[in-house]
Image 1 (cartoon, one colour):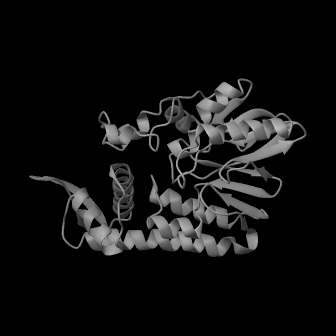
Image 2: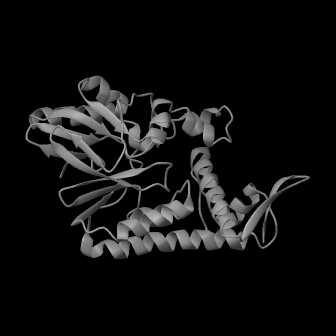
Image 3: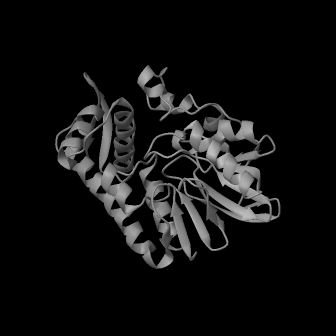
Length: 294
């Protein structure tokens, strides 16, 4: 397992073949044309033929390179799971669901939340994915996203956003989840894996010996968020008010509308988890949907 010049581009090599996961990074912004061109040059210099683009999930920071790579390497086939493929081929759906299903306003149509449309050539189904003689193991890591997957190859587990590096957790406070219960389950599943190395989509390569500590940090961050949301329900409130209470309690800062939309979504996910646990419930009242403890 080797990496291209940006640490968020993973490449699996076998002879003159290559399979690439093609996101752009959330740390320094979407991949610029310069960085995408550097990927092209790096493959040429290594005499590698790009045959596959593996999308672990649909978030714009993980599919932003698709359109460029598909144009630059028309022979490359793009792979994704069924639910993720629907959003990859229709990237407008990401800002749509972040805007309660409505047509998204301009701030939600930025490159951070809406990638350029790209195709998916083959759906990933089952636990094995053979590509040009390379047998990749596919593992289910739903939770952060609807049908997120990880990829395992020769003792290395690329865990996508199944977990985050400690520095990322410290920076963002609450790990994003579409389904908090699924997110917790993915962490426990990864805890039982025996690969030598684990590589998150956002974070550093982690040795198996250090994995438990990193996963514990993720579990703790989720627990802190869950406790903060439950505490925010000390008196009934709507989603926006609960989110404001959690922001104050955890001293979180928002850089703009896109970040707040993502934050509001994860607070809603935590409320759903509380409802499943029998600890909270929504009711329709005069001023809207109000959440309260049970």
